[in-house]
Length: 204
Ligand SMILES: Nc1ncnc2c1ncn2[C@@H]1O[C@H](COP(=O)(O)OP(=O)(O)OP(=O)(O)O)[C@@H](O)[C@H]1O
Image 1 (tube, rainbow, N blue to C red):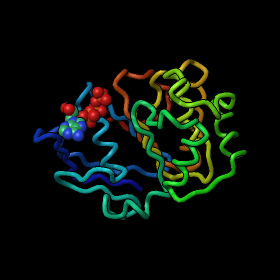
Image 2: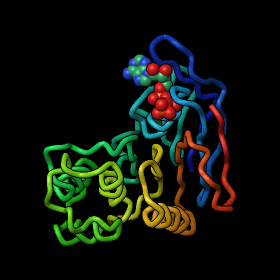
Image 3: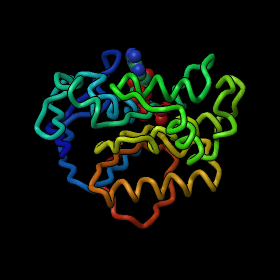
């Protein structure tokens, strides 16, 4: 479903990685490891078409990125590092905005149910700036609980700041996504404990 061919990335005139080739099929999990600044975020941004490779190609279901980014937007979720939420908006407004950007409109009740899934329904109407890091991350992760199902999840350090309960919830969501035939790519600089599920590992 997701094909990387001899992918290379440069930032600020520096080559971060090159020659990266792999194919992810339905149900696959790719774990991207590497030190701070090694290029994990850059790789995820290449995979969702927010960045252009310096060499090589990325294809989702045969369509070339970033050229096909608009079409592919409805099939993927990209959750950026450090819960990229607008501070002045509430979690509910942030979720509604994220859905609108990918062409979806949902009812407030559906949004509240998603926030309920990550345990932050009670915070739905507060400004995000008043939330803790972990609460922010839970709000961002609520997108994974929103319809419609998206075949490709790109998650930048999604376990950051989560407590044990939220960590368990996210692991179960990722497992369910894989069982449903989706593809998950996640980055990690902490050497996450492995949950035993087979994964493809890349170190940058
Ligand atoms: N907009 C930019 N312009 C120039 N260089 C950049 C830009 N964004 C990132 N970089 C550089 O690219 C390199 C890789 O950054 P990236 O965010 O992809 O790393 P990372 O592995 O995700 O790091 P971390 O674990 O710290 O989040 C870094 O050296 C960074 O300074």
